[in-house]
Image (cartoon, rainbow, N blue to C red; front, side):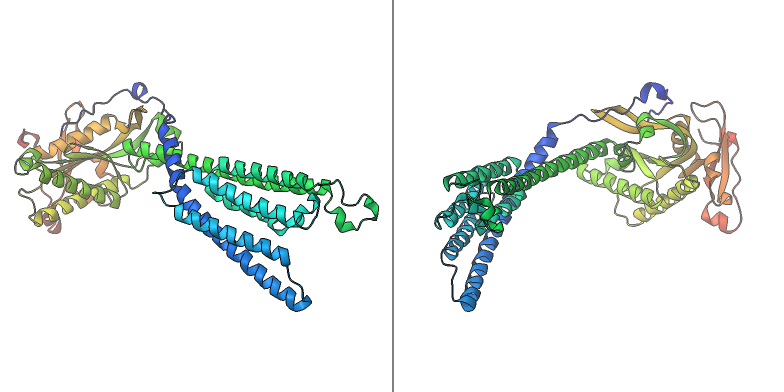
Length: 471
C-alpha cells in the first residue's frame, strides 16, 4: 500500500460543508409512503365503520327494550333511522374492506367512500327531522347529526387533506341545505319570550354556532393531517440527509455532521492517533484465489479489522486497497487514545494469528501496522457530489511510513516514540531504530513490542545498529 498522503494546505481544501440540496427523492418517498398507508388506512376505516354500525345497532335495540319496559313506548321512527344507519355503515364498511387491497384499490375510492359516509349521515338526518314535521332548527336534535364529527375524525386517518376538506365542505353544504329545505327559522316561536328556554337553544344563532364549532373541529383535523405530513416529510428529509452523509462519511462522524458540528464541517486541527494496517504480499495471496474467493477474503479481513476497532473505540476512516487508515481520538480526544490504539494493534495481530490457525486460507496472512501520534487537520472536503472525511498532515505520513518500515524491520507492529509514551506498560516496548523516515529530515525513535518469550524471562533484545538494518 502506497497511499499518497502528502501534507497539504488545509485552508485550500477544507471548504465549508455544503448542504445537500433538496432532491425529488424526498417527495417520491413521502408519496410512496402515503400510497402504502392509504390502503391500510382505508381498511382500518372500513373496520371502524363496521364497529360504528354494530354499536348503533346494539345501542338502539338496548335503548328500545329499556324504554318499552319502563314506559310501554318504543322509539318507532327513530329506531327505523337507526337501523338504516347501522346497516348503511356495515355495508359501506364491508365494501371498503373488500376493496382496500393493493390489487383493487384506486385513489378515487377514498372520495367515493367519503361521499357515502357523509351522504348517509345527511340523508338520515333529513328524514329524522322532516318526517316529524319539525323545522330545520331541530336538526341538531337528531342523533345521527352527531355522527358528523365522528365521520371527520375517522376520515383524518387517511392523512389526505384534500379528501378531508371535501368532507368538511360537503357536510357544511349538506347541513345548511337541509336546514334551508326544512324552513329553518330565526326562532322556533314568534313569541320568543313566551317560549320555554330549551326551545331557544335551537334558534338560528345557536345553531350557527354549532355549525361553526363542527367546521372548526373539521379544520382542526385538516391541520392535523397537514402537520403530520410535514413531520413525515421532515423525517424523510432528515433520513435522506443522514443516508447521503453515511455513504461518504464514517458512521462515527456522520451523525455529528448531520447535527450541525461546524468544526467538523469547516475542518480543524487536533491531536490524533493514526494507525495504518496493510496486508503483506497481497498480490501473492490473490494469485491463488478466484475472484469470488478473493472478494470473500478481503471482506473477512475488513470485518476482523472493524470488530477490533470497535472493541477499542476507534473508527476506520477509510479502507485503502488491501489496508486501512484507522483513527483514535477523533473527533474527541481522550487521555487513553494512544493506549487504545496500541491495544488494538496487539488485538488485531492475535485475531490474524487465530485466523491463520484455522488453515482456511491457501497462504498465511501477514500484516504490518504503523502507529503515530501527532497534530493533524481533520474535516470534510469535497462538495455535495463527492465528500469525505479526511485527515491530513505530517503525522499521517509518519504513520504510513512506519507501516511500510515493518517490512524492513521484520516486525508486525511499529510505533513512534510519541505513541509509545501513551502505553500503560512502557517496558513492553523496545526501541529498534532512530531514523528519518521518507520525506522527513529529523529522525524519530521507532519502537516494536517486546516478544512475549523475551518479556517473560526479562531479556530485552538489543536494538540493531543502523548499519545492520536491511535496506
